[in-house]
Amino acid sequence: MKDIDISLPLTDEVVKNLNVGDSVLLTGYIYTGRDAAHERLIQLLNENKELPFDVENQTIYYVGPAPAKPGYPIGPAGPTTSYRMDPYAPKLLERGLKGMIGKGLRSKEVIESIKKYNCVYFAAIGGTAALISKSIKSKEVICYEDLGTEAIHKLYVENFPAIVVIDSKGNNLYDR
Image (cartoon, rainbow, N blue to C red; front, side, top):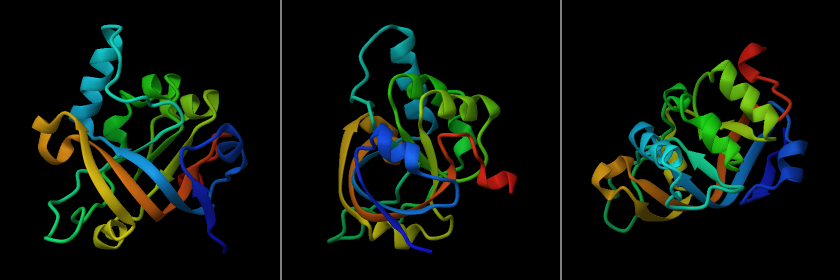
């Protein structure tokens, strides 16, 4: 199997050509976010306020990275269980978010939104947090610093390994 190299941000054309089971290497900027950060983002949208960053064509990695050792930009950075973001994901996909990275199953509502808005859900491999952190070259907190490791970070990644588990057609690797 060959890895597909993808430069971020995602485009409609790239997303459309990804298929469930594809192994990808992502290079570019991604954002982090977990439950508390997602709740705040959706609260802003519900109040018709601007988001603290433009989600258009971006990818969010569901992770709360561990503190970095001296000389490293980040500590171990393994994926968080994705279903915890399911109540928030459809609204962000509607706003233009193109990709999500996490682990585990997604709700029927999220899968329908993935299809409707031509998006993709990647899985990062659980248990490889230290290995994944090697593909993260820089980290910058962009908002919600009070949430600690759950703040929203902007990460620059090179050859970040992931697998397409739900493609833009709604095909789901977990159903196979």
